Image 1 (cartoon, one colour):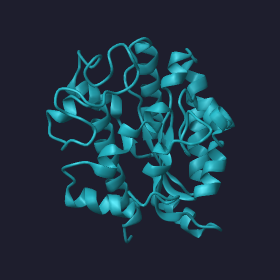
Image 2 (image 1 turned 180 degrees about the horizontal axis):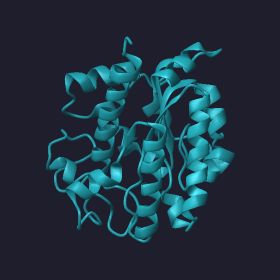
Image 3 (image 1 turned 90 degrees about the vertical axis):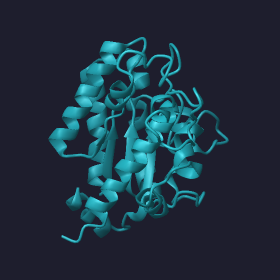
Image 4 (image 1 turned 45 degrees about the vertical axis):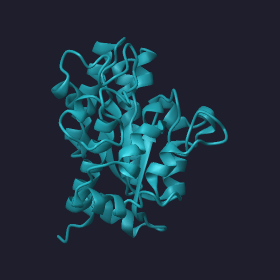
Length: 255
């Protein structure tokens, strides 16, 4: 990823320091995803430094959390995510008038992009290979544009359990093959709730993470208990931690 970052910095125009896009469907567009980053409790010094670098709270086109959670006038989307979005629709653009991924990368020139996509593909029953090819095309777009991809697995799917599991195995294989940073959201959910994630870290019978539940909400301090009870807190916290690692090991690295 250091070579990717160097390529981005040398492009004309170059990637913009600290700009990290969050790209995906309603699980990204939902305000609770950005809540811990923007107004949460329990930020460590490293978290605070990462969030400052990411322009979190700037509420402009450098602030990826703002871009992801902004309620766009077109409805059903933000600047970088849209409800119901599939991987093929991300590539093509047009869902709720969301620009294509290529257009998003050209417009915002991010140094990195967090990509979580696939829940709606699973809901639609898309074959694993078709989904994998679309995600690989999205990753290739990022790499070609000098953008470091931070890939995320999708949460378990209460109605398409085997298919979502197969998608996530494909995502892990892509991350290994291309040496990409990975947020293994599915694994982190199952570590905490191996048998009862449906109705705890995910809404009962639904594909969306929980927000406020059992004394935890997306802005709570990331204690072990809170991270077992708010699916959006878990995702937001994991994202900030992984972006912080990428910042230190890729963008801050001297060699």
